[in-house]
Image 1 (cartoon, rainbow, N blue to C red):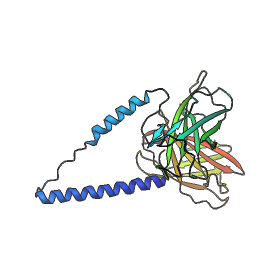
Image 2 (image 1 turned 120 degrees about the vertical axis):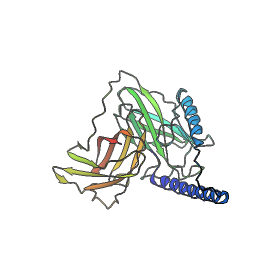
Image 3 (image 1 turned 90 degrees about the horizontal axis):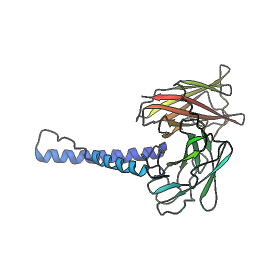
Image 4 (image 1 turned 60 degrees about the horizontal axis):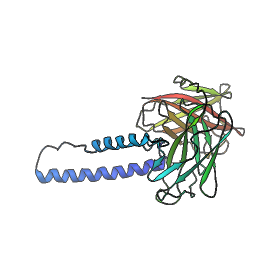
Length: 307
């Protein structure tokens, strides 16, 4: 996903400052020339963006490199930070340890990470058909090597996401989501993406999503949880929130973390939970909602269409 809400605020503030400065310069030039017509805007950056996209495409063809658009989790590098791993494949049908390292702009392993929702590293694994979702909190060795224990991945192509915030160095305080792909050998039986729906059921709980997000626009989502037709109001905190919500885009597996806005107040979560949703691309997204009751973690999944 995307950057966290605090990163988004910083970007918007910088963008607003730049816009104000550009407007002031334009008005000054217009007044001095006496021209009554505003000059046309020449978006010269368009050709530069095309060149950058072409270069990125060439890089993505290199073995083991996943250099795609920054900000959606589909790159293994951003701002000098790199996700590295020797694991290009994992064994089939049994628990597997995926080991990786995050290196900084100086090329050295990063070992200083800030807490994000009570954890220094969030790790996600998902197959190319958006099945097999796993959200893991790996452990780090003294040398900066992280180990994520995966539960029996099925054959196919998998993408491994690392979500973290450096606590020192050039990227201090900035949220990163980087990823690489691995292969699990065997015959991969592709599972069709379930149809879009505004509700689903998991472990006897009914989960309903309200909201119609549009691509590239911030939009609120409200999630309601009931059981046996009655509101659930005893959700327990999980990762310092009442529900953890992530999403993956159909086709390219782009990542998004939807940030909760409901405040935590003991074991009294529910019935409605609010989220800040900012999904940049239209199409189908597979949502994974994790919530906890009675010490048990539940994961509900549904497909949401973004216009």
